[in-house]
Image 1 (tube, rainbow, N blue to C red):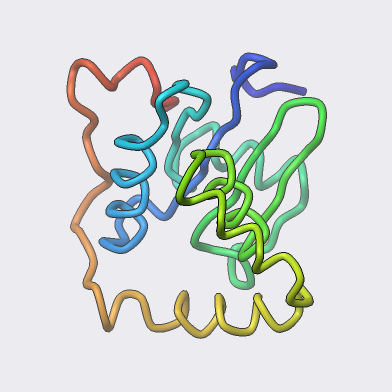
Image 2 (cartoon, rainbow, N blue to C red):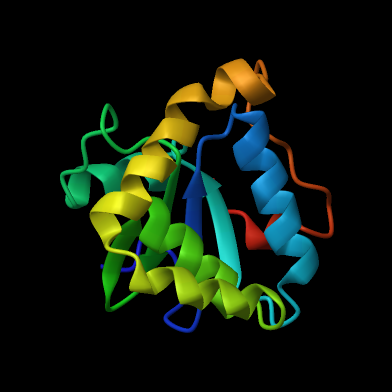
Length: 139
């Protein structure tokens, strides 16, 4: 199942109303020179389809998912690190954090995710991509 994502692309699913998540997506867009990533809000139809297909509980995982066709879904710190490493240098250096066990990385990740609205705020609606970026977003 590819959910409309070409096999050679990766899909970042993000919390569409979270300011931190939106800023992170903007960061990736600027540095994704190979245009390897596509984007969709968790709240979008493709987002909800992937959540249902992989039986993901959004009360436990609600900020970022990385969907890779033919491989499945990564989440939390592993998803964030795989995105960063895919961007090249200097973000590739983030791979060093893979030596930290996932349960520790995810504890830090969950702490930030739990407080992201309080620290960074929240939008009333999902981000609207510009015309030139529209093709990289799934609805």
